[in-house]
Length: 201
Image (tube, rainbow, N blue to C red; front, side, top):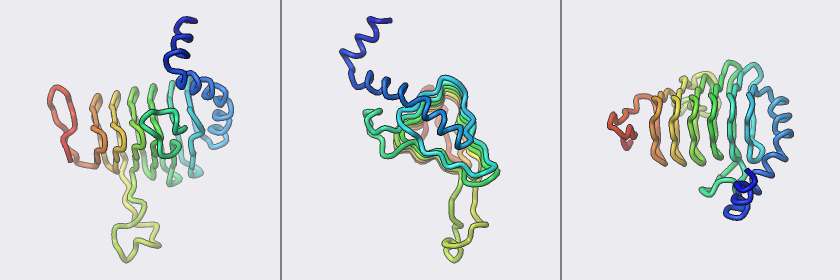
């Protein structure tokens, strides 16, 4: 164990620094999550403070061994902003399974977003289940009622490549690879090949 630690310090000192900072920050992040009403299980790692915006009455539930990278220097791909987790209505739910990782992305639910066990979400990915505004141009600025939202589900052991956009109604099956920069929405078709990679949109 000691040899492994010394090897990490020697070969990748930035990883060692990230780990030290993460453990120093851990109790403060835990308090922040509890103050904001987030239900989180054990084994979590937060590399920097996330941004939590929770609508009163909504629910954010996160499973075991969750990992979130918010510091720009915690991921070599570069992180544009801290991880954002937001519920947009009082009945909204965000349910994150065990062993899920996310780097600098946004997860915003007005209805329900479910992310399955073992899923990895690449840097700067956005996951939203709502349009935020009505599509009608006459109502778009001020109407808060006629906004379309549909549940969104990402299965187990999915790998979402960096800079992807997952939109309302998406239903991503287990074990799928979503190529970097993809746009996924309701009705997106999937390649049933051996590699199970998503078709280009």
